[in-house]
Image 1 (tube, rainbow, N blue to C red):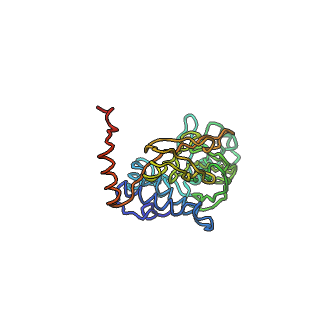
Image 2: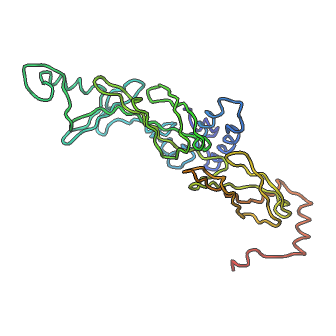
Image 3: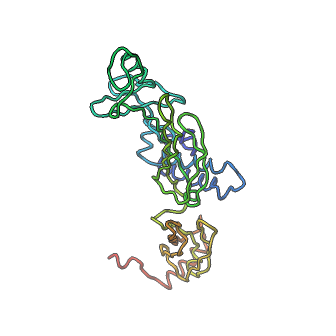
Length: 318
């Protein structure tokens, strides 16, 4: 993963507003729906979302700038308190860690069993009978090697709804194609049995993939429902008419009544998230957008209208 500042094309001193603006522009440009003939669009879109999750979040940005997390949001290994760097790295730079039972002590190291075998070379399986050499074995409450791997995976809102396949890079450097189940939720874990680390004398660990759903360029998730702000012109709001509204499927037409105020919300039934067999709704909030720049004709029209039809929409505020 590249440096998130480089991915979004902003300076390290960039303000939160600058980062947000850069993310929105790139997300819209590289969204897979707008680049259906580009096989790399999805990976670029995912990279943009991951970068925004790091430096678009104030706390994570500070952690990244301090070197506490990497470009994927994973904690950087800082060594053990009061000591050196700790255990040896396994294949691909993976650090082995150990869990201890009652009375045990945790420690790092890629070959803990070898250390114990060298210390207790005459111990036999399951006890301390001398005279026969054998490998040191851990009892049920002793030390066990943690061979599970945990990785984070960011999916688009469309991928979370429809499912699909995504390539994931493991800390070991290995890559896997992972099937994304339709309807997956943010924070949900996908477990792949036997796809973790391996060590002699131990069954392979599992791969635990924690799913997060990237922020969408215009949809906001609200339970099973979706919300979207719909820009309309001043004349569309005054005169009414039909406007196209994006959905997770194909766009639909919404009839706006005459004299519709900015902030008015319409509900499109069944156009939300299709969870648990009962689809949510899509709530469309009208936002009146004026044209860029000064328009002499529009100003003259508004002055005439103001003089003939004065009103105060803030009268209830005192």
